[in-house]
Image (spheres, rainbow, N blue to C red):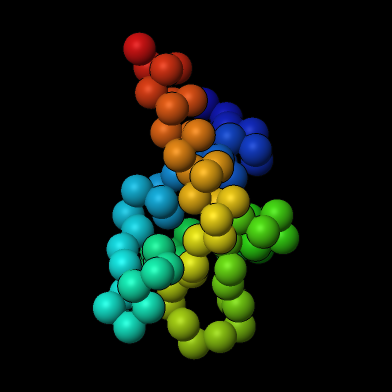
Length: 83
């Protein structure tokens, strides 16, 4: 099944959110490992849903408030879609 770029972007954000953690050094931020397609990750960063510097040595991203909100909306969207 062919997925649109928009669906891939949504699902990547959702997976980032579902696998997120709180770093003990920065407990106010939700982080996730950046092991996904960099083209998609760049687009999510361009849309201000995540903060990331793909050129940095950091192996994780940080969610923006808008990114967390959008991920929570996507959880509802995909739960309703599969009901």
